[in-house]
Every structure is written in C-alpha cells, then in structure tokens.
Image (cartoon, rainbow, N blue to C red; front, top):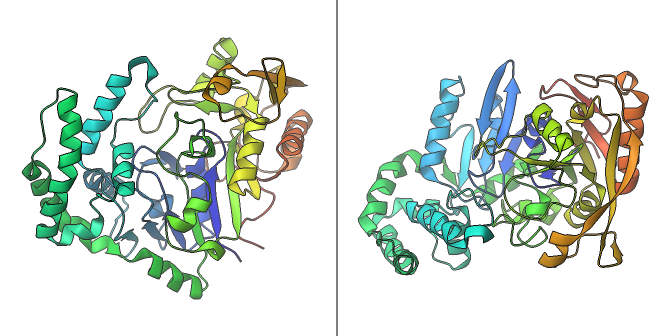
Length: 430
C-alpha cells in the first residue's frame, strides 16, 4: 500500500471533496496541506450535505484522523464556526480526530481588510480574490511576520508580534485612506479563541512520521487546482499557495518519499471562478447549459462558474508539472445529451501554434483554442457504476482524453454520490 495525494488538475471545483471522501474509506488519515477557507469541498453522504472549507474531508468519517498541515493558513473563527456547523450535522470534532500543525499561520482581521482594499483598488484589474485574507496571510508568512498557532500560547510574544505586523499593514491601510487597526482589536479576540484552538495543536510533521512507521495509509487533500498554482498557474490570476502535489510534502512535513501516488481530479469539461484567462470559455447557450446542468456555483462564494469545453492542453500541462499518476474524471454525466462535444487540443496565437499555455499574460489572454470535435451521446451516464453500462461514445470520449493528456483514468465519477464511482486503478495499491 502507498500514500496518496489528491490535487485538482484544472482551476479547482473539479469534485475533489467527493473523491477524497470515497478514498478516505481506504485511508486512516486525511491531511489538508495548503490553501485556506477560500477552498470549498462539498460532500453528500447518506442524504446529508457537508460543505467544508478548512476541515479535511475525512472529518465526516468516524475512525479517521484529520490533520491540518502547516501549509494551510487558518482563520481561527472560520475554523471554529465550521466545527460548530458540522457538529449540528452529527460530526463531533475533538483532538482525537483533528490535529492542527503548531506552525500553521493564522489569518487575522487585518488580512481580510487589506485583501478587500487591494481588490477594490485594482478595479477592472482585480484578480478575483475571495476577500478572506488568504493572500495577505501568506504574504506575512513569507515576510516572516506571521502569527502562528503556537503563538497563541504566549500572550507577551503574541502582543509583540502583532505590533510588528501592524506596522506594515497599517501603513497600507493609511495609504488607502483607511483607519489603522490597534493591537487590542486583534489580540483580545485571539486570546478568547486560543483555549479552543490550542488543544488541537501538535507537531504534525512528527505525528505523520509516526503514522507512516505504523503503516497507516495517509491521504493528502489539496485545495483549488493546478492552474491556480502561484508558480505554474495563470499568474497573477492565481491563489497564493502552491497547489501541486509537491506542496503536500512541505505543507505537512512528510518528506519526499512519503507520497507514492498522485491523483489528479479532472472535470469532463472546464470551469473557472473569478477573473483570468480561459481559452475554452463558452459564453453562449452551450456554456449556460453546462453551468445549469452541472450546478456550477462556488461552494464558498456562491459565485457562478465560467464554463467551457475540456482543455486537454492545460490538463496535460498540469499532469506533467504536478507529477500526476492518474486522474479521476468527474461530472461525465453533465455532457449527456450533447450532439457534439469539443476538446481543445492546442492553441494558436499570432500565427504560432502552441501545445502548452505560455507564461505570458498577453498570450494567455489572447490564445485561440484549436478544437477536435466528437459525436456526443444521448444515453444517460448518470449514476453508472461499471464500464459496461456506459454508452460506447462516452467511452470513446474518455479514451480520447487519456490519449491527449497522456495519463490514465483511474476513477470515473458519474454523480455527486460517492457510490456512483467506477474504479479502474486503486491509488493506494502499488
């Protein structure tokens, strides 16, 4: 058996929550390793819908240990609210089933103010941030002024670090005409939540190595998607963390040899939330149909997602950079009923052909997709649980995708229900 990392291979919203929940039945431990409460995973279990942002998907399964790694930025109030919300659905969260890295950075109210202010100033050039303070929190981490979970145990240290942090952020707020924030505005609420957060705090890196020695199967759960990676995504319209599988090692402390298989969650078409380039975007009736049938609205923000045809170029790029071994193809059933289906197999720009998406903002915004057209299928794939039940043309579509992205379909999801999954290759088995 091996440990598995799950990442999105597009712009997020690929259906990671369901797949991680399905895989968690085979795992002992589920780890979140990057992102913040801007990520949303929706799980439907026995008719109950769980919407998670910070909590790992394994939290809704009894007998599983959930871990929030140091690569995650944590809004303590959002975390406590989420714990309370799942508690109302019958999920009891205690230090027995949830651990938080003691060196994980915190998102503070000043981060949210700066985030919203910066997006407002950008105007038409806004990057589509959720305004939850994710970016400024990561910025503080890199600038070595972040408040971390372990700091909550020392009031004196916490005060000193907040004073240092606010020197920077208040200068930004004042420059934008906003009032300064005072240390007490942040310190007092933190001291109130500290006793609720600290019991979960632990050296996660050490815990993971112990679990690995014990032979526990560990599932690493990514947030967002490869195309939002701060290095390899459609910069600057990206998130503030690395979303590739490599981030699982440094975002948890497991080490390079701790992950044996990388599963890329891949939607059978393409969606994106917020601003930024989207070569295959459809603003016509087809795009509207994909959005309506696929219920394409953000779990966290509720914003409608932009929809378009499957982009094999981008997924292949994510597979190569992300070290993806196999994909879980989701939402195939949304394509039921289309007479023809298109797949993007390349780009053209200024007379030049590309089999990848260049890093240039200008080219990314202007590339034209080169499509390959296939016949669709009229039969339903919704809820199918075996290859034998799939329409022949749907299977042809899947096989063509495999050829174009140069990667095997390991799992196929045909509805939001975890049971409606076709297993081709068990990621946990070497």
